Image: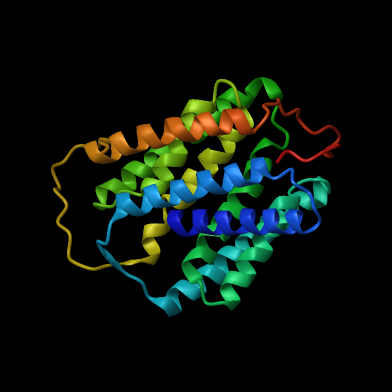
Length: 257
């Protein structure tokens, strides 16, 4: 999923560059740089995962899960829009993209995009009615829930590295970009539970006496640290930081994301 998402981002960015050049708009350096970064990121993920196949995907079951996840995203999106009409425009685009992926039988990417869209709506739902002074409390609570979800996955001998990467991003951003921290925490929560939709290729043995602990594999830790530092550097340079104010009178004057 991580590789396919980054390849898709690269293709979209290059298509945008091509469209701009056709109208003699040469202000495309930023888009080209973004495409290069996403492509390099995808190559890095592909090399990390290698060619190992540890799961068997039930396509029919995955299709049903994709449909259900889109439905969940739609439900939350519509609920948020009923209270904050200006919010979640990009989430609507993601939901529509998930429908397109469903129609093209790209069920894994459909599930991934729909899960992220649901998470984006969940961020706003979690902030409605919350005083700004309690934002840090909400972030810490959600980080703890995400951590427990990762531990639960690891106890099943599964390590959801994409979810873990988002968890690390959220932890790193919580002191200076609380909105992004909440968003990445929701991503981590959604993506840490996707293993339930896949069938194990081989039986796995879990030690019953093993105490609860969140132990990151050494090679994963090294990879994520390097990848995370590069991502944070790009994030800091490419996106201006701003503080989000709590919606007044159950309405907002602008988008949170």
